[in-house]
Length: 214
Image 1 (cartoon, rainbow, N blue to C red):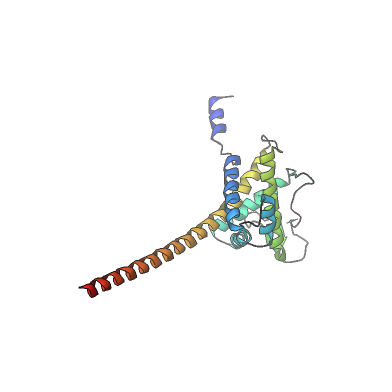
Image 2: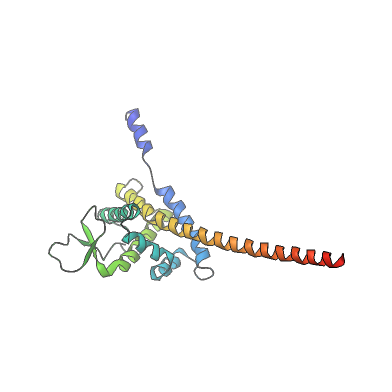
């Protein structure tokens, strides 16, 4: 192999390590978000499929027409596309999308394209929550495959589903952590304000007592 080809191959971005670090961030975060309630990743996933910030942010970005929303939806499209060529499995069964329709021509119903840039895969308008739940299960299964080595690292389709999973989970976690930071700053400012008021009151009382003594 020529040197330039070797260098080019080395320049390719791999998403396995970033995805695992991103999952560790999620893992640490949910232990604070679900204190003493959930003990495992599987339990957290099942909880967030029902309600919570992960679900809320997914649906917000999925419905967004911003650049962020377009990139997010395209990552979803690529996940769906590459899963057509890669059989993702957990211990019991193949994990895949069931709510996806392909090429809606001739079908009736209110369909939503997964990506307006690539009008190939659709869901029914009332199945957005089901689409979210299946996506979260798929991303969790990809994490499990990585942790337990149940994948072929040379398989380009698997590499692509890891990349798509990263690009889906990362903006969700970014929004959540950004919101948490704002809340923490507000709480810190409120605490400092109370401490300042308490200090001012203490100084006022001290000055008052000094005046009386004089």
